[in-house]
Length: 302
Length: 312
Image 1 (tube, rainbow over the protein chains, first blue to last red):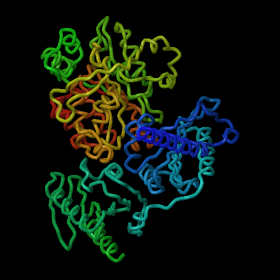
Image 2: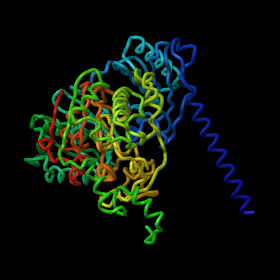
Image 3: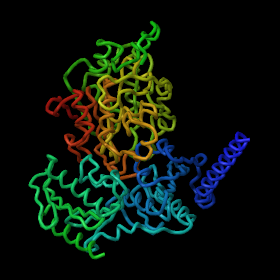
Image 4: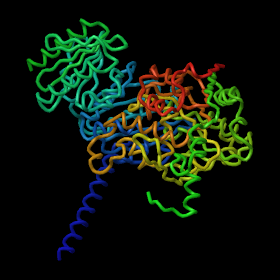
């Protein structure tokens, strides 16, 4: 009797999981441009879906960043035109809109041209990226010819139109000081934060969630922890890191702000406010300290 | 590991256990030194003709005949699987290596990872060099080896051909990598490992349910040390690096910013080539964990002053 019951339970579970999986696949297929719209560009083969760790088969070590944010599945399709040029379309379904925004914000190039596709989109010489809702989309050409760039845009616009709804940016990016803010990024762990190439290969922030702001004279980070005690503990560790790491010299602690200079003559200042940590990096000591103190005080008033 | 092994098993292990724990000193030494010469040589050729420049770079090291003898089997490890610009070795460079090996009298060329036809077709030379491409065979056979001197990675499942071939040529592309900051020769070894071994690069020898909750790259030191350890399995006899057009951001898969120094590098020591090539990414090799750990294994030069560098 028990065996029969278990067998039926397993059957139901398998059937539910198959049904969910089918629905997920269907949801991605519905985002693909219709063949009639992508005139001049035809699909080379059928669309491929990669779920979970299968992402390694598509983008190799690039998968790790997606896992850090929360990845669900991706659809990859290749298009080709009569001239033999190709365009690779990848539609990533992330766990939530913040994850999609985060990936987009980290991967956007400094000199990218904003483009009115998706909730935010950017055009680069041979590719277009966008995010909308829980989707991050990359459309990359084999070349940067005019024909190829036209193809990229047609395909990107179709996908944008097919994605239903929109999503919210993570609230932490709004905590960066607005004045002079050039670009902002959102991270959920070591890989995201390491893309700015300021820290070494130690996860000194212990995989926190946070935002990075680029300014003309400094880079700023705001990190959020579970509670004040956790943020305090992380600050103690960061201070110890600044004191003990050979990269840093002249450690000082004044008015709740700890500062040290690294071997590339960059001043690192860190401070804490409640569950938040603030880090400011600048080639000028006073800018590093003042911006860190300012942001910390601002967070305290929230 | 069981203590008693039969003769057949012993012979098999001697033939394939490159890391040396079973095979004994002679095989272990040969694998670990790659080229028995301790002198580090590197040649860099800059220009638009990538096929010709790969040949020029190897010629400057003494030519392929210095590395490949008539009748040898050659294993090539090409970073070829990804599709975006700047994410894969230009096929012209790989084709140049294949041609040089065949001209030197190689009996067989083994691809140590799966190279698709789609990859070769990206080269305008692919039609003309169809016969050469057909001579490159892939076998998905894997074998487990013990890495005696490994600090983090003690065992690895790796392409059997990597251990059995007479000559091993590494053909990576230098590019950005979100985890290790760069990828080139040393990290390319992951291309010859099984996916279960690659997982261990992320989590070390500890596995199981807890690793699922750690997240990827929870510890870059584990990854970097594992890469350095895996390179002890067998050192390449020759390394030919694509530094022509590569991803400077969003690596290893892209799309991202492309840098185009149009450089092909050939080197007798792959650590030397990595140290030399990382300048293209604006990185200081002394700060890169993978390089530091490989140096601690005595894998290559401590500074670039120890390397005889030619530029053409």
